[in-house]
Amino acid sequence: MARVPPPPEERHPALVAFGQAVRIRRKAMNFSQESFADECGIDRSYMGGVERGERNLAMVNMMKIIDTLGVQPSEFFKALDKPAKKNKSA
Image 1 (spheres, rainbow, N blue to C red):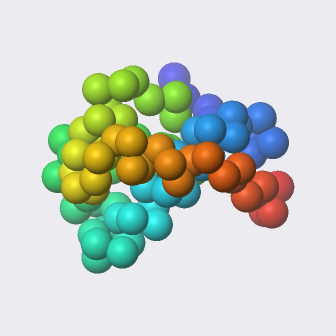
Image 2: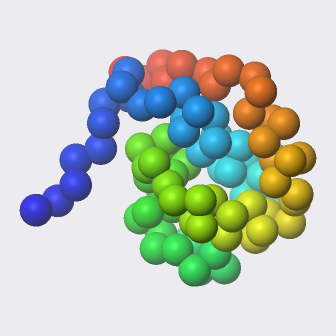
């Protein structure tokens, strides 16, 4: 049975902010989502869910992503101090 993601209005703001920050940094590094997921050792579809704020990811996966981005966790999480933008497509 396929996993059904939560609707945008039910996604936790911290997960949405984390995903947005990952997407911004990944694109700045000129990674496709697929190649970045490969570098992290994470499935591409899972990475897509992370970037959309649909995945409540484990700390291990969170650290794989942050390590691949090449930043310190404290630096990365400073970006999450600001509230995430609401998804306007809902």
